[in-house]
Image (cartoon, rainbow, N blue to C red; front, top):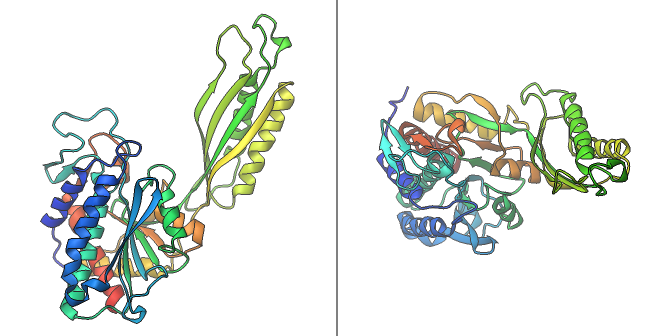
Length: 408
């Protein structure tokens, strides 16, 4: 069994630098951190020695003024003309959620504080710690290229995206550009509590706009109550989701009605009501089932409150992802972890949706995983922090995974 390193000063220092650059979404967005990461990669590229020019660093404008980055060590056989996804891609997002309330004065969001083995700051866990580990693993691979004086047998990419904390348009742009696709191993470095997470509930979003007819509240029969109709629809959707079959790994499908607005006076029958719906679906339930549930509920609501009419829009549809227990990436990650850390990570579900899940669902890529430093329980919370021992572990495991993949 190997000797575990409980600290990695380089990983801790780089995470601190990244945390100190605000990249909130919405907010400042990713401009400054993208500049920092690009400059860091340009400097580190020189470690490949005479092959530095073969290492490609590219920008991709996913949204106005918001660019993704890709750094690529091509395989020797590609001769510098690699256009397909890399054999192994480390996938990271550069944005964070907003600061929010509840932060302690002694752990400010963008002035990282190291205390009792924990590094505090917005994004330390989700996912600037993971970004730092991926950057350093890529740098370690550059060192190996320089030491050997030749390109590896297989290619390695680092893809840094924008907009993950909103609509994931950065990973979608990277897919359209051919950086990510149906082939190649994809590992994102989201916080995973030391586990390898590859299964995700689907994420399907709807908006319902219920239309009615105004009237004086003393004569409601002269109008059509849009809020009452929406209440009918909400209750029917909630009941239908509760009756769906469970999945042995992912559990039950769920639904949340995150926003609702309607009416403008307590004395007027409301003629409008708006609701947003977040469904987290598990197999065998799919998009077509969700569509039927919503539309059937709205039809029943229209019948229950005559004079109302519902407009329904699906605003997002991400399919559920099931981890293949025979995934070669999972096996390679377990082997690298055993070599570097003396233990094999357990597998688990990812309760949210990640950039790697977008790749898996959009491209049908079966070799996508999440493995990174920190705990899911601390993501998006005030006083967010990451253990420095986690940074050491993940940097070591990612570097070993890359070395085993590129040179085996």
